[in-house]
Length: 177
Length: 76
Image (tube, rainbow over all chains, first blue to last red; front, side, top):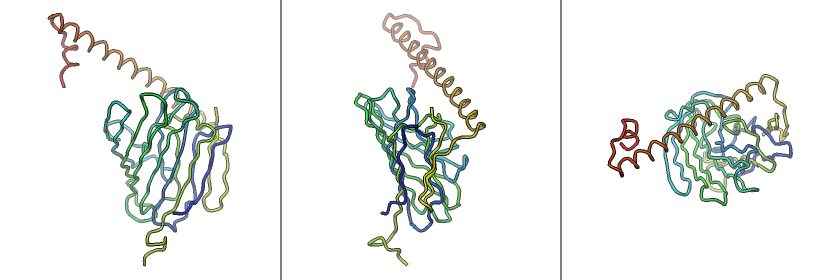
């Protein structure tokens, strides 16, 4: 696994974190995010691919420490992005972040693109979410950009980070011919 | 509130903070206002449901008839 790019949100905050011109030389991608937003409202993070707002679908599992649930993108009426999990805001324990790991296999191939997502919140209360999502972008184009933001366009807080890694198939990272 | 986005160009390694256009800001503010309206509506709906369930339970315990609305909260 090789680091492609990483960024940390500065003091001014940011509405989104976008990775563009993603090299097509890897087999899979992993995006690792630690994020917090500056609103008192709770919110979900979302992923958009190649700047598009269509052809997304997903099915998720969620737990909050006392209950669990499952639902689909069509049931909740969200089709313009893929949920990546709950992002903590200012009403949560201070200096704690939500953590996300997204795995995008065969991102440069010619099939529809899938995203496997797992996330957890750090929150010193009885409610802290765990979230697992299977996402689909029904588009055969290679993935060249990824954008992360909150569903309600809240600002990412300072020290939120995002790191994009490339993974090559084959032992020792070599490409299998 | 920040009206900037972070753009990381993976090819060049350059990271930029780009300001949103006026149009993007207007869209964002409208979306946030609608999100707040939706949140208030959801909370009101949840409170109304909780009140109905409490009323239904109290009536069951007291042996009083439930309204159809109250009965619907108990049917799985």
